[in-house]
Image 1 (tube, rainbow, N blue to C red):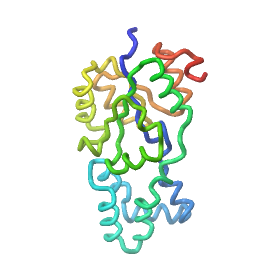
Image 2 (tube, one colour):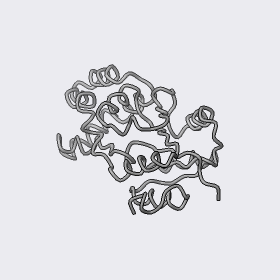
Image 3 (cartoon, helix red, strand yellow):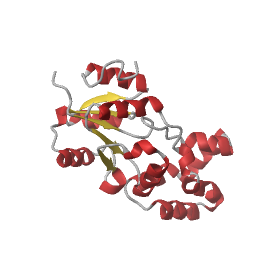
Image 4 (cartoon, one colour):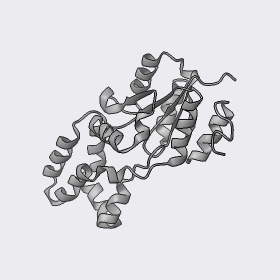
Length: 208
């Protein structure tokens, strides 16, 4: 089988953990965190940011709409970087190993425009991709087929020559439906094995 021409990484839970639940569990305890999420739907708020809504203004408006939880909702803005940690060092090493071999590496991520710029200032590896496709800039989020179509149109590589990893099955399925090669991310070692199987890295280069 012909090797892929480019590798596409998701970011959250592939290159760094996205764990607001853990942040709030430490702050409030699990039971109160479950109430916060259920009563205020902060996940929908975050999805709107990922789709292009302004970060700070969206969080502040959501906090104002839920005054009983306002202080905790505002943490989504003020403590956001604590929710996007730690780094997944094995995956970062794979990103760097691929680029060292001249393999184009792209990011396709559901991320707000403002939050991605902030994350780049805190995480060096986020500036190491050949191209970055951020939902908040594109106005569409995974798994909408349009986000995959836009990436294809921009880079001019046939879908079956792309290999994509993401931790969400629905995002993988949407890419596979367009003919992309896909890998459901459950840990960096499995992703490393897949990159070796595709002929992109040796086992030593993949850290195996």
